[in-house]
Length: 485
Image (cartoon, rainbow, N blue to C red; front, side, top):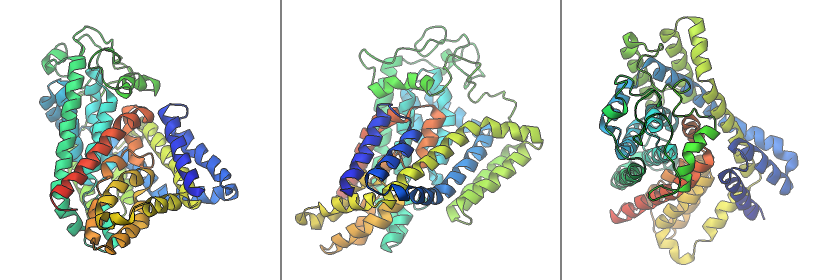
């Protein structure tokens, strides 16, 4: 019964948010609360929620101060050179913009933190997407998939968890997987190329000079101040996103209106959306190398795990604010400027704590996982690595990485060992689902992504899940082809 109710609860949640019948925050809280009562454990709801909140509180704290820190770094101009480099590559060509998004997300993902990746990628690319009237859901989907493949870095989390759970060396897991992961990343870039071509057919292509003819230095400023739009017309009226050949999926078509529906500024309104204005008052060019050194030091300390990540971001945010904005009023203004993202993301994390707390506390997630594992036919024993790779897609989507790697992977490894399948093969196979995992409603970083991009979570889910699942299967197939799995 718990197995059935668990699957029904997850299905109900996904259907309601994808149909936009409930907000993600409301669904994350109310649906598990209802099902907790249905399984007869309503009296324990408070305990489950507090346990979930306790587990996710460090993550919420990390995201809060990470948003402030990287928000300040964006304000002071640390990432402007990267943005200009990407823009020179993109040249106002929708195809190049999407490919550039994938490349940028992959590069920034080297720090091992999804939230950081999404903050930098969205801040760099959203102005250009809005200026060219491109689909924002394409941006969030491509960024999530690129980050998902790169999330398998030893310091990214999943590899370390797999190593700890199976008592093997992380390098023995990761290094042989590099060719398969490289194929997965190439697939994401190729997919980005295809999606970009579709956007190009829908919107056309101009040179960057044409887009910014009236304001050559305002490359990243809003889109309606007299220059031509991406559809070649004067003014800021967006090109239609639905209907007609090459108009893309419903989720893509909805993304333009979703930006408005979720509180995003109209791309044609310069007063509401300024992007990375190269003349903004918050720039601190004299402190550029200090900020760069501070960021490199922060990332190095994160990789070496010198201190807990929430503490590192707390300290770094305090230093960044104090040095760049020594006056109290300026510090308050910077914090207020990023307060919306902080509240939205932190609130979503604590709402997800209700969902994970009920799933775990009632035993639903354990029953669901064991039902899936027990359903593996006996004849598949010698192929448990492949089974693990396939199961990693749904299990890492519906479970936290901790739950999967410490609760399920050891069971799969034990079943594989009985048929001569090594723990290393199981560990490598368990990584293939990460491209899909990064769009899970239980991953806090995804709320940073959709929140900063002003994309509805349901639109992101509808668009991304199919492509992310395909990316994971490509990684699995490459692992089999290379003899790694």
